[in-house]
Length: 136
Image (tube, rainbow, N blue to C red; front, side, top):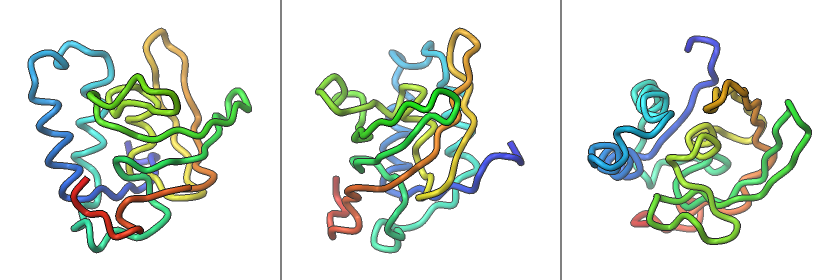
């Protein structure tokens, strides 16, 4: 993990994600251990201290997969908000990989089936904390 980029997560996001991870229904999902490893190594800050340009929960982010050249714009959501167009769950490999990254950072992320994502954050289009929303 030492080659992975530094990530920053808000204390509120950490608390809520860990609550999701404790649910029996998600313990069997692939990638849960990798997400927990990311949370364990994250720099945790209070929501009011979150720098802009970092992917937090409910942020809309433009990113590319450098392995394929594909570009996307998605909003990172909790599982109960997933499924709507333009969203990605924190429990999905892409969601787990994006959490805590800042503009310009990239991360290699293993997905089920052996494929590897190489995601790079191009822009944080909207970050709730940057707009003074600390409770979402």
